[in-house]
Image (cartoon, rainbow, N blue to C red; front, side, top):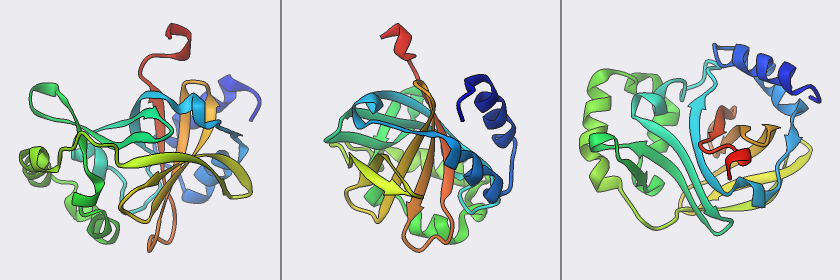
Length: 188
C-alpha cells in the first residue's frame, strides 16, 4: 500500500475487528521490513480476527517487544508490578495451551494470576533473533523464538508502525498484531 494515510485508516479499522482474510489481504499489501530497522522498543496490540489469541496477551498485560540487535531480542515484554516492564521467557509461558484454549484465559482471574507469576517468568537473557524470512511470497524481517516453534514476520505500514504475523506450529491460521515504535524514528 503506497498511501500511508490510507494504510493507517485501514489499520485503524482492522484493529476494531475484522475477518482474518481481510486482515491478511491488508498485510499482503505492506512493504517488507529490513532487519536493522527493527532495533528499538515497540508497543504491541492484537488485531482481533476471531482467533484464540484475540485479547489474550492484552489481558495478561502484554506491552510489546524489544529488539536490542538482530541477535538480542526480547519477544514478550509485559507490564509488571508498579508499571515496570518485564521481559518474559516465552519457554515458560504456556503458549500451546493458549493456542488451543485462548479465549478461556481472557478473564480477570487469569490476569491476576499471570501478574503474580510474572516474576517467575522474567528473564534478562534474549529469547529470540531477527532474520530475513520469506512468508506469503515476500522476504521480510522475522523474529524466530529460541525455544518455541514460532516465527513472527513483520511488514511495514511506515517506519514506526508494523503489522506482525505470528506463525505458530499447530495453529491453523496466523495471529496478527501491530507494533508501534515507542520513540518514533524521527526522535532518534
